[in-house]
Length: 353
Image 1 (tube, rainbow, N blue to C red):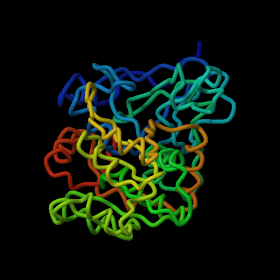
Image 2 (cartoon, rainbow, N blue to C red):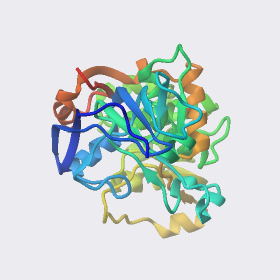
Image 3 (cartoon, helix red, strand yellow):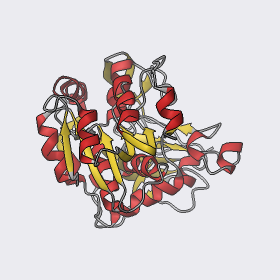
Image 4 (cartoon, one colour):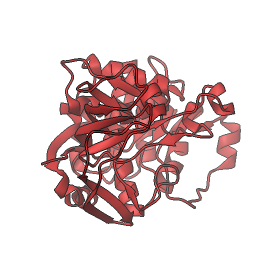
C-alpha cells in the first residue's frame, strides 16, 4: 500500500450542518494505489456549495460532518503506486466526481446519473486526495498558460454545457435563462457561444449589466416589469422562447419556465429545489402545447472535456466570474456575504493563506 511522504496535519473546512462550518486541523490524507494528493492552489465558491451551507447537506454529494468544497485546481504533491499519466509537480484540475463506466446508465451515456457515481469533496483545504477513479477519468493536466482560477471553473462550466446540450438548443433558437448566479451566467454565455438569441431573467439591478456582459440580447428584471412571463412572451413575438432554462431552484421559477416556453418548446429545470418541494403545473398547457420538460444534473466526462477546451482556448475566462479572493480562514464570512448580499459571482479561496 502506497503512502504519501507528507505527514501531519492540514487546515481544512469541515461542514457540520446547516450554516455550521469550522476551519480545523485534520490529518493530511494518505494515498492508496492509483490515488493522487493535490496541493490546492485555488478553490472557487459556488452556488451549490452555498445551498449545501444553507441546508447542511446535499442529496447526492455530501453528508456532514464532511470536508467541504468541490471546484479546485492545484499542483500534484504526491502520486500513489500505479499512477501512470501524472507525476509530482504537474498542474491539474480534478473534477468532483467520476462515473463507474459499467452500470446501466453509463452504458446509456448517462454517466451523470451513474448508479455508483463517486463524489469527492474537500476543495476548501490545503490538500485534497483524488480517488483513483477520478484520476483515471476526470483529472486533466493544465497547459502552462492556463491560470489555476480559470481551470477551477471546469466543473460548473461542464454542468452548464450538459444543461444546454440536453435541451437540443440550436443556432438561431431563442433561449431564456432564469437566474443570474454563476451558473445562470454560464448558461447565458454558452447559449450565446452556440449561436442562440438569449433572454436573461434576473432579480437584482447589478445582474442586468452582468447578463448583458455575458451575451444576453434582452434582460428582464423581476420587479421592473409587472410580469416577467408577459415580458418574455412579448419579446418573442407572442410565442414564448424555444428553450427555457430555470437556473434558480425555486418552485415559482419552475412554474414561470413552463409559462415562458413556446408551444413545442423545451424546458430544462436546471436549478435543484430543496428536498421535498412540490410544484403545480398546468397539465392542459403541457399536453396541448406539446411542451417537453427536462431536468439535468451534474456533468459527464464528455462535457468535462468540452468545458476544459473552452477554458483552455480562453473562450471562458475566470476574470469574467471571479470577483475577489480570500484566505481559507474567511470562508464562512464569504459564504455569509453571498447569502446576505448575493452580489459576488465567485470568490477564489486560497488555502494556506
